[in-house]
Amino acid sequence: MPTHTNHKFPCPICTAPRQVKLTKKNKPYLTCDPCGVQVFVRGPAGIEEFRRLIERGNREGLFERLAGMERCYRLSCPACGCKFWIEPKLIRTSSFDGSLKGFRCPKCRDTVPWEGKP
Image (cartoon, rainbow, N blue to C red; front, side, top):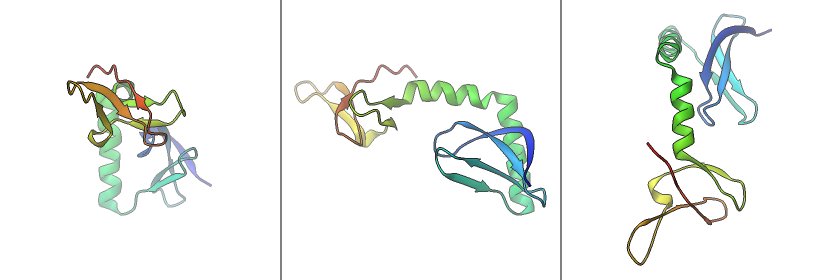
């Protein structure tokens, strides 16, 4: 039976905070059911580094920073509802003056405008 801890760590796919659990042998892991991800941390060095990452994230407001990044750099396509992170290969520019028009949705290829403020 997994032991739940009071610690949270972001899913590596969707960045949503997920509860860190412990196996029967006290090794940390997390699961993200929506993404289908399971992360198991093995070995003393990895477990120690994972513990440091959790402590650092708590001290530095990791989840607030991730939420801010997501507001700026993760778009939702109004046409198909696909959520995606902006990246250089998805940039759409005007053929007239080269200005940024937005980002191409990786699913339906529509242009999604970007009003992000870093």
